[in-house]
Length: 101
Figure 1 (cartoon, rainbow, N blue to C red):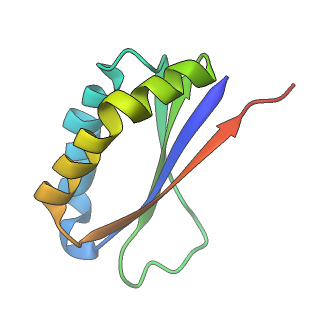
Figure 2: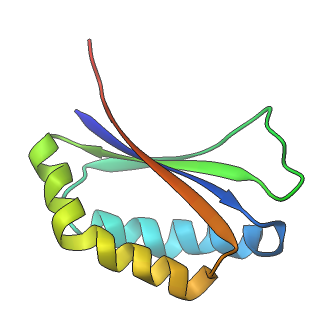
């Protein structure tokens, strides 16, 4: 199982609207790629929130191939839409992890 993790620091001025967009639009569009089986949204705790909160979205793919398919076919357009909507009011760091038993 592969986890595509996107950790995002969101400016206070957009935090509530960004979360609604993430839950109601963006995460659903990512799932419509059929590359992931589920996702979870978490809020990071015990960090400096002076400029705004930090969240992570974890998308779960059954294989590295499905993750690669998402990156090659869908990720660029998703990132473009995010910047068109929110500009420089957020910063994201993306990591890829593998679940080990």
